Image 1 (tube, helix red, strand yellow):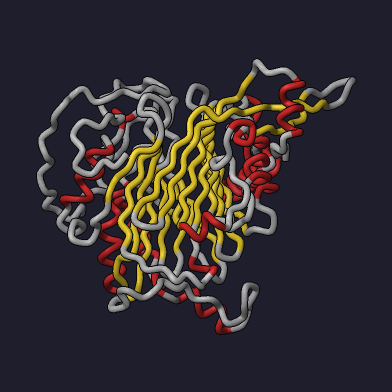
Image 2 (tube, helix red, strand yellow):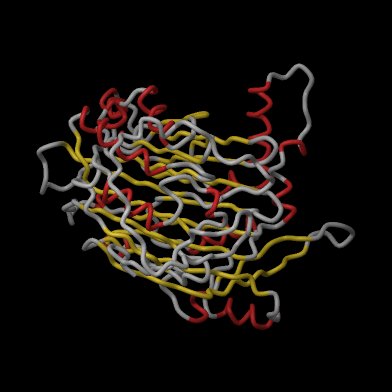
Length: 457
């Protein structure tokens, strides 16, 4: 549903604090328009979020900003390809590390993150992308694109103004902006401008540094009384239909109530300390142990992986392979356990990837979203978001139980409860679905689902 200029759309504001997994609707029928924000967000990094209470807002806010060279309006956005090819190691290939936004210095990136109330902890790079693990999720920098994901009570949208200014200094201008998030579990904890989707839209429309350049629209996908997805898109791009590299798609799997045995792997104190080991080395060691014990490393074969374990609990990981990224963020606390997996990999089928991710974390329910342009969506041959009936079910096989009888296989059947899709800004397709673990199905029903072609991974 398009939200621009809507006055009665339900949102997730107005909730009482610390009420998990509930959607609280706005009670007002009319709302006064927000005044213009006559400031430049210079103080947005000040202050801090609420005191940690044992629960955490896991679902992330995601911002994607694409740039083009100034004066090239109407021309397709083309990302540079190293002369050395995909695996090129020549001087020409290495030179793409200093193209466009990748020329930004660490001080610039720190300034961007400060606006969102987060900091850079570590980074990895290849010929195409720089990936940063943050105190609150992840940052990815391409020559002409920035992807920033932040969780908790961060103020992500306050990064846009400085991104525009820094891009202008590099001779770049806005080409495409996408902002999205799931409804919050604890909306009352959020800071301005994230206290409701209405407020986020008002901020984008009325901020003096943004309104002339971000003439986009907001949308809601999914039931407002259950898990749903908010999306804002402003598109000024004319794509080249002949370039495969000009397609785009992002898959996000947001998992809730993950298996307790899996959750326990991400508590820092469950790992031994080594006398004489430095704190940095301890964090690196425990981060690797968590990655291997959980099976996360197997989800991104061949990738450069940058993992981070947090105290007292929590985990973040970025993985980069050529032009694609994958990222995982884990909040294991009982009562608010959450895992997200996001990737922009260009694959013909997501079935095995989805099965592997779900098998790794064994959630009781999950929300899956896919944002893609028309051509990118056409290249996806298998996708549970597009199926119906049994074809939309997901069955995974896990090994459980150890003892005299060894391990045994257990089948887990997830049924899609809701699905929504919308096409926005000419060629941007947004899809969202909810899946729930079914515990009242017989082995015969699961076998029937398998026969009908559901991926078992």
